[in-house]
Length: 67
Image (cartoon, rainbow, N blue to C red; front, side, top):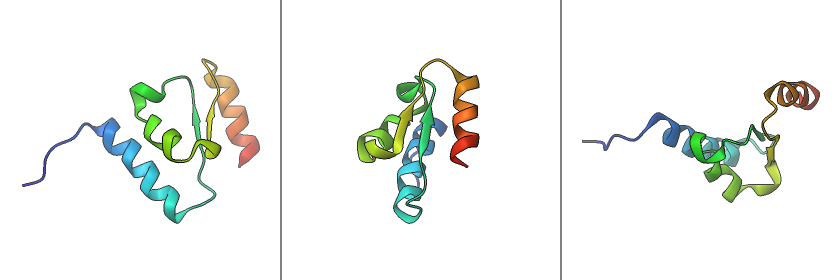
């Protein structure tokens, strides 16, 4: 039987796993790394993690520019 984990924990872990395969993967965060568990990604790939602060509208513009 597999232990259940919170969806947000699985999300943080999956980001780290995907980053190993996809070196172009970056994470943009809106000052919620602890709550969304993107802290795991930040700890593993700090050069690919960007904290945009509490400014989701700006983060969307940055994401569009990076794309």
